[in-house]
Image (cartoon, rainbow, N blue to C red; front, side, top):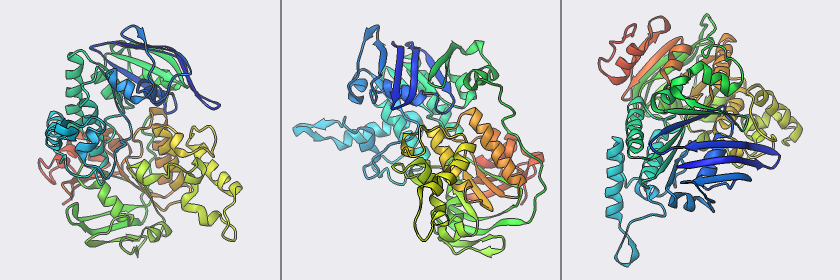
Length: 501
């Protein structure tokens, strides 16, 4: 259906794509994998008509084609679900889905009833319930991603490009999305699937293309590959264990949360995290995990409860006080809550420390650059220049900058909400190693994660939430997928093995 021949694309001195070939076949789901910065997102933007290739040819149904913009790509039957949701926050969900394609009635007036009905039909197909009339502002990342998916499905595309569509979705939502993708494939559409989750790649896709450093490396049938073989092709080396957990002896209580309640989100949440301990906060999407850590950090005010750091009570809803006490929060939504997209990489990486780096109230570029370099180099952030806007980086590299920003503060308690979302396998292992080393150095780590292997591989204890309540506290020795999921689904609250009352 669609082929790229010798496509290259550069941005200034940075070569994002170099002589790439790719073939997408009708009735097939094709995976595209590679490390962050491998060129996957640039390739997607070329397919979507956002960027024209510098050299090379794009063929649609065997004929050369040039897209003057995204509208041309949509007209050709190409729909893209981007890794980062980009919704208009003050428009309704239905208006976001049909932006630029609203159904019209007499007098060319927008048919809001038809638009609402079609949105409900799309959400029903996905098996989710989202009010089409509610504003997009305030939607969770998972719900924003579902709106983006509905937007793509509404075009009845011949080619569906899915760029990390499952990063914020629960297991049930992922299965529903895969059912829709298989249905489109069976109806003759081509599907390009980009993901760092190899279980999804091997479950959904018939062929896999691997990219590295902007170049095509290999294309092969999924049946002829293993996860280890794909990883070696991606990173050019063998990756050590993905969960390099160091044995530590927990010290004194660093974080003590008592009876935390926010009406409509969570209630009576109490737990502790000790120095040298990694505690995972698990549960299904919507269980209230992100809301709890935001409240602990003082972003959201609470209706009841207290938070203590090393025995000192934090004033509620006071983020500066939380930072001063040694708390750091890597948020789930990096674009909206973790970064200032127009500012440079080095400015973002030093934002929490700008006063510490200043002299007589003046912030000098040299001090900022040296401070940013320490952690951006350790996390291997791929950027042409540290002065480039952080918005020009790939999603995974943006996540690394958020991590660098907070690690530079030397936190006593580090809260990480989905720390490896959208990060490739090599960097994921590095982030896990970093968290393990921080715990070994005495930092208390509270980790929110929707990936069970990550939870089980890294946590000393697993706290499980269900519908806003903490229902289980499972030690590492007895934690397994079954015990966590039993508690998370509410099948038998408190019945998970090793759970404490």
